[in-house]
Image (cartoon, rainbow, N blue to C red; front, side, top):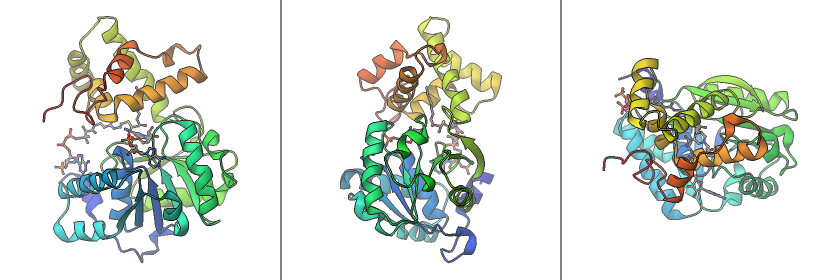
Length: 300
Ligand SMILES: CCCCCCC[C@H](O)CC(=O)SCCNC(=O)CCNC(=O)[C@H](O)C(C)(C)COP(=O)([O-])OP(=O)([O-])OC[C@H]1O[C@@H](n2cnc3c(N)ncnc32)[C@H](O)[C@@H]1OP(=O)([O-])[O-]
Ligand SMILES: NC(=O)c1ccc[n+]([C@@H]2O[C@H](COP(=O)([O-])OP(=O)(O)OC[C@H]3O[C@@H](n4cnc5c(N)ncnc54)[C@H](O)[C@@H]3O)[C@@H](O)[C@H]2O)c1
């Protein structure tokens, strides 16, 4: 078993002191990222509530988590982890007793602000709020609350159970105490943390997004096929996935939300120009692995 998965299967007891003050976590959004974050939080001994809009989405998300655990863990461990996970559709009720909120809903500023504004009224005073946004400034989300000193960013990477990195982002208002707790939580989740300022794309996406967009533009210009670009980057640059495989894996809708948001904010930056090809595929509902087709048709 690979090193990453060995770490992931280690057994954690929820009474362990490794948690600091964060024992109860609420993950809002049970999609690709929310499911992975909830899985790792529960696997590392935290009590976790996952929130989404419907019971159907939540049941599918729980099934995804169980399937992911089956790739790396045995029956007893899986039962323990699943026992620490509960699901709810009422976000305000879910945060009543929570230490940390991790938001992983759609990449849309207004939707995120509306959510945090309602959570601010429902959550206890000590609760720390975080967003897993890929591209939206954390401070623009935090203004929806009265707890900007207890607000930060936790940017996980997909697939969350495997990717070791966690970007921990502070805004000017984030208190030292909050930031230290978020770094401690990252360690408790067995992630390697890096400290980030609230700059566009933090560290990874500031470099990754222009690279992926330029790959799409190469194909638009007719310079290479997606298959050849992917082969080139895997065999020539040692990347585990080529940029088109990765776009399908991340979700074309999420990629479009990111680039459209940055283009709106920085219209003169050529690195952040939207792509007609990406727009066309999204308008056709080709969102990547989640819909069965994006740049590639996924095998059934
Ligand atoms: C245009 C704008 C775009 C911007 C995008 C930004 C998005 C975002 O903000 C940032 C990101 O996340 S960026 C994205 C960042 N992400 C990247 O860049 C990802 C790049 N890709 C990769 O690193 C690899 O292709 C994978 C690790 C995904 C799969 O690895 P592989 O070798 O091709 O395939 P394998 O052999 O199947 O699996 C290998 C091992 O992993 C295990 N496993 C896998 N999934 C699992 C799961 N869900 N659960 C549990 N376990 C899972 C599996 O069991 C196996 O374990 P074993 O013990 O060895 O048998
Ligand atoms: N996809 C990636 O690789 C990746 C990586 C890192 C960060 N992110 C970020 O994580 C966030 C989620 O991305 P994803 O890929 O998991 O998206 P996704 O589309 O897979 O899941 C989003 C989920 O949020 C739910 N949702 C939407 N509005 C909601 C609300 N008001 N209340 C509760 N649930 C709501 C949806 O029903 C859906 O299940 C985005 O901000 C994205 O930028 C994505």
